[in-house]
Image (cartoon, rainbow, N blue to C red):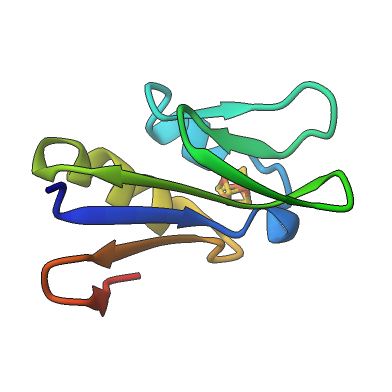
Length: 89
Ligand code: SF4
């Protein structure tokens, strides 16, 4: 089982591009609405809008995504330690 889970509260994203600059393997910018997307994530939609993106990662992908989360000026990227059941950011 992967140790960490990333959650992106996408509606709050202001499209600053920091996460995609810091961790481009995981984060890209959507040219249509200007918000970021977590590549390969499970997307939850409500009324046609993506309200959440979630993806599990293991430790080797932790640092890049923690850097992305720390770079987010509006704190809409969260990382949960699944084994410890603890929100790290
Ligand atoms: S750093 Fe935050 S606000 Fe900026 S594009 Fe990424 S998720 Fe959106």
